Length: 474
Image 1 (cartoon, one colour):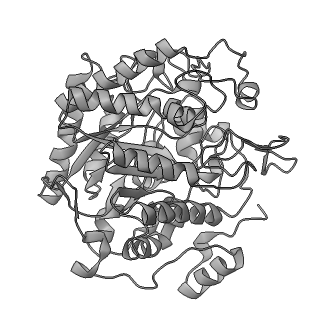
Image 2 (cartoon, one colour):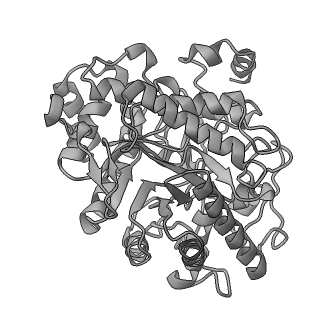
């Protein structure tokens, strides 16, 4: 991996600064951490409706591919959610992606929210809150949401190895990459309206389950995200920006009507790239495409550049719809994983880093800072921090202190080191043995039909039978 500098070897602020300068990136960090009430991490955040969130850490949605086939949580699912509760973070963004209908699942072991699964999912949320209360006392300042999704192009509701996609248009690169026949899988406008109703019904159930908000997922290549790039789709849900956001607007209007007191959040991919593939050395490279590439929302047409003009419009739309909660990410793990999950080691279906992963971190943080600057009234959660490892608190403190983001979102780190937030908040030294090193086993395992978890660092997963199978796969 000739493009990569091992972050674990960077021991001093001077070395970290030198690496940043060497890479030519804009990545701010503080050399020392503030303590006590001076720390930006312990500051609360007051929503416009008066609700207070008790600190600036957020647990990102982390799916385990481990629910029961009927859509209810398993013991593994519950364990992960309890870890979220004891993390110390006061914002739990959605727990994990929960399908609004069985055929919209990304795998046969994804949670589904319906009347049959409602009691179990309600109980899991209650257990999360109880665990948080036992560890930290106060829960009035804990905000817990549920991420609602339809997996669209990446549906696998019955067979983990077989796509059953529902797409919005014939993507010239993704159709061929995943072996899709033209037109067969494209949703009709009527089918889209039925999916919108499923989201509205799921939101009502989420409110009954006690969740503080629902996230209408618009990221990572799933259905909501694909609407944003449906520039070639005819009719009411494609073409113009207004049409491409009709799906969101109709969902929001329906949810506001059905449950006016339920908050709504949106996690969205603020930029995207053309799909990448392995070169002869196994490193990622953009696939060949002649001319302007129009299918990357937030892209500049080159396939590998960022233009935030439409994402800015998207945030303005969210503001007009009364949505305050926003979570920034990018791309899709299915075709360009390095831009949203910067990692030293790729998953089994990925490629070696085409750039130093620190470049990907800086790209994500820079986009978030730019969007936050132009939309100061929105609560924004930043993404991409786990790769920073020991340097995470120093970069995160800088981002909070300068107003580049409102919350530090952590995903992969929560699997290996669920107490990370609590330790930072308490001013404790980090437990280096638990720090996520981005081995990507949490992705490689489900890509090969196994449950997700941190197999290298979490002894619970290290001792499971899947650990040996995972080694054989790798």
